[in-house]
Structures are given as C-alpha cells and as structure tokens.
Amino acid sequence: MSGPRVVVVGAGFAGAATALHLARAGARVVILEREAMAGIHATSQNAGMLRTAIADPALARVAVAGARGVEAARAWTDVTLVRPSGSLLLAGGSARKELESVTPDLSALRSTVRWLEPKDAVSRVPALRGGTFEAALWSPEDGVVDSAEYFAALVRGARALGAQLRLATEVLGGDPGDDSQPARLATTTGPVEADAVVIAGGAWSDVVAERLQVRRLGIVPYRRHLHATGPLPTVDPSWPFVWAVDDEVYFRPESGGLLLSPCDQEAFQPCEPPADPANRELLARKVAAAFPGLLDLPIMRSWAGLRSFVPDHRFVLGRDPLAQRVFWAAGLGGHGVTSAWEVGRIVADAVLGLAPPPPEFAPGR
Ligand SMILES: Cc1cc2nc3c(=O)[nH]c(=O)nc-3n(C[C@H](O)[C@H](O)[C@H](O)COP(=O)(O)OP(=O)(O)OC[C@H]3O[C@@H](n4cnc5c(N)ncnc54)[C@H](O)[C@@H]3O)c2cc1C
Image (tube, rainbow, N blue to C red):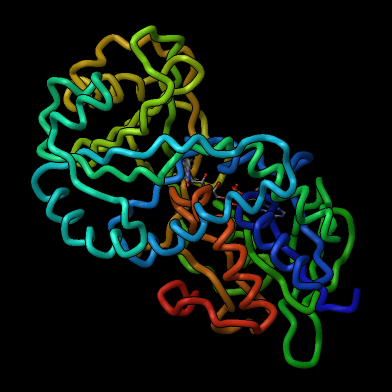
C-alpha cells in the first residue's frame, strides 16, 4: 500500500468509522487506543437508537446518511444489526413548534415522517395513555441498532481493509508537523509519524489536541444516565423508541423490559463517569409527568456515559484551521451511533482531499 500514513487517535465509533473509510480508499491507517479494549467509553454506554428526527437540519442530514450506512457494515458481521422499530417523538408547546418548523426538511430526507394524533400514538404504544402530549412525530425508518455488534463490525471492516489497531497505546504528546515535516506523536508504546492525524478522542478530544500542540475547540463532555428495568409483561418488544421532547425523557424496549433515560446533562471532566444513585429519582419524576402509564418501574441496573459537544452542538469534522495535518472527528454529542458511518466518510474524504466537509461542521467555524 502506498497511500498516505494516517494515525487515528481513539477507537470509538468516530475513530473506527473514519479508519474504515480511510483504509477503503487506500490510506495506511493506524488506530491508537489508550485502553486495552476498543470502544469501552461512550461507544458502549449508549442507548443504540438510530434517531434521525433531529431539529437541526445539518445534523439530521448526517444522521439520515449515517443510519442508512449501518446496513453497509453488514459486510463484516452475520448479525442483524438493526431492529426497524420506528420512533415516536412526543411534543407540545414550543417543542412542537420547533419540530413542526423542521418537518418539511425532515420529510425531504425521509418522506415517511408524519405527525400522529395522541390517540394514534397510544394505539401503537398503549403505555402512552394518560400522557399530556399534543402530537407525536412518527419516523417509521428510525430503529434500534445492536451498537456493540455495529461497532465490532466497523473495527473488523477497518482491519480487514488493512488498518492496524494498537491497543493500550496512549498519545502523550507530539508535534503536529507542517508543510515540510510529518506529524510526530509520542505514545506509551513509542513514537509514531504520520502524514495526517485524526483526533477522534471523544470526551478527551481537546486533551489530545493540547498534547499535539493544537488549539482546543471547547469540547465539553456532559454526563447522562441510562436505566434498565427487569422484564415487564406489559412491554411489547416491537414498540418504537419514545422520546418526550418537552419533558426530556425517553424509553425503548430492551431484553423484555425497558431502557430509559431522564436526559440529564451535567458538565463533567473527561473520565469514566460514575452513576449517581439520585438519578433514579429524577427518572421517576420525569416518567410520572410524561408517561403516567409507566409507574413504579423495577430498575435493575443504571449507568452513565459522556456525550461531548462544542457550544453550537454541531459535530466537528475536518481539517484543523491552524494545523494542516490535523483533522477532527469529534463532538458527536448524542448522535454518534446513528451518524458514525457518515462521519467517517466525511472525515476520510477531508483527509484524502476528495471532498470538503460541510462548512457547518468545520472546526474553524
Ligand atoms: C448515555 C448515552 C446515550 C447515548 N445514546 C445514543 C443513541 O441512542 N444514539 C446515538 O446515535 N448516540 C447515542 N449516544 C452518543 C454516542 O454514544 C457517542 O456520540 C459516540 O459513542 C461517541 O463516539 P466517539 O468515538 O466520539 O467517543 P468514544 O467512544 O469516547 O471514543 C473515544 C476513544 O478515544 C480514546 N482516547 C482518548 N484519549 C486518548 C489518547 N490520548 N490516546 C489514545 N486514545 C485515546 C478513548 O479511550 C476512547 O476509546 C449516547 C451517549 C451516551 C453517553
């Protein structure tokens, strides 16, 4: 292989998808991952919902293309990756106005998206009876992905196409290089040189940038909790995922019970975030307000993960404004599973000079 040498820092959804697209286009790719296993941070702590009904049209476009891309990963797994459940976004008041204002954009991307009366939403999910929502946005093409298997397929694909994965290799420092010299990275397993470096460090992306002497972009991780119930006889596993946009709480069927989140967001240091036992009370309050048909849920397990954002909540994709050999695949917030395939394609095209990323995601915006 004689393509450019590209180092991808971080083996989560962002890094794995970018490495796959780069390797497919002939780049010589090395993924450096600090942990002894790939994908153990946000990538394995999420709810696995392929949500494309997003109020920001720029994010919705990437999410739709990303969700369609999941099927392409079937080339590297025998497992059925997606349960095409559809999604219901319950809304009233200002949330409804905001979603209504973008419904034409959403419909242009996915023609099947439509608004339902509350009674029609209840007929799909009887547990919504008694809720105070005014309408529900039904997105039948949304679904739930086996995110562990999807991630494993992306890594398998990248490796099958020639990418190397170096685990237990933390980037400690380095020099971003310039016109005349390659980037040089100092890692816990020795020095690495590269024609291009992709920062895909999730919550640590700004830390990685600083270590490479690249300006931070203001990426802030926010902790969010998920809670899983034991089996519930009233739950139908074919239900869509349901997101109450005003109350900010969601649930979906999981293993005979439900997986739920009260959509908490607390700024946090990059770390492995502990679950706060008090979060179950917040969940109980929000469920009582939004889904009165779902009281006294038997929560069996709770955990937390970090969603990382820049202030405008759009992704950061493409070349760094100052360091020409450095590229970003970061700030994926709560849409990194859905969008991974397309994020990887956009960043790989930027690294290889095949196509510029959409300007709304430019790191220098
Ligand atoms: C509770 C929760 C629910 C979510 N639900 C959904 C959902 O339903 N649908 C959806 O689309 N998205 C969801 N997400 C978002 C999704 O999980 C993330 O956007 C995505 O996993 C981010 O992937 P990443 O690769 O950017 O980060 P990460 O998975 O954190 O990967 C970054 C990697 O970089 C490595 N790294 C960091 N620093 C270094 C260094 N110096 N050297 C080497 N390696 C380094 C880390 O060890 C890590 O493995 C959810 C997230 C959370 C927390």
